[in-house]
Length: 272
Image 1 (tube, rainbow, N blue to C red):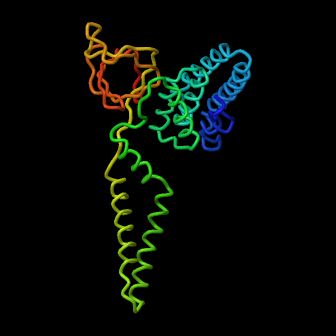
Image 2: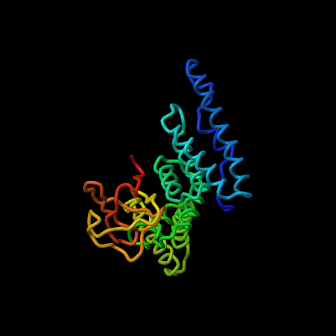
Image 3: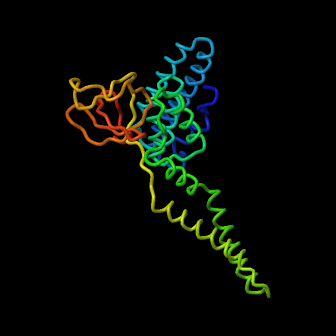
């Protein structure tokens, strides 16, 4: 747990707008909500301290904090992306990795982009008992897309572009007929352009749901009469893509390409 970037006051305060931007009639409601968030922050800190001496009681305290944060989901003027991040962190400390992955993914889908979120989501995924890839589809394509999406790649592409035209200028000005360097620069520029276009054209699939139950047996069909799909049950925190629903069952696809059926009570969709 010490590797998780935990809740701080700075993460609670951005959940609400500045009072100066709120209509006067609504300021009392905003102040009341802010007081609730500050109170929950104090509860969170007490739960962290309790976890050091009494882990079980600490997890129970974090469960209460997570539940109270979830109750604020429909509150007006609240930043749902930041709230989802805080809920995911509370569920992590409660030992409920399924709910933690779920709310971190919801924070992602709401556009809450931060290094803390990426770090925590990566960390909580490592706590899962099911050893499955984090990304769906071809791992090589997903890795390439991740690299091409980074800010470092953007600056690298600019550097290659400038290098190419500098080589062209040198080639024109030089009396020598050394074509190797400009050919090399052109090749690198072509490769960079191809990867950049790939980044725009290719979008890796995201999970649409998370298993939030412990030790759930996946079936080959929508019912208990069907044989188990795998030799061992699936566990909380495992992500999937929803294929179809039938009565109280869902057909899902895991990140390794395997398909199976799960009861709806064992899963929660990211978008609801």
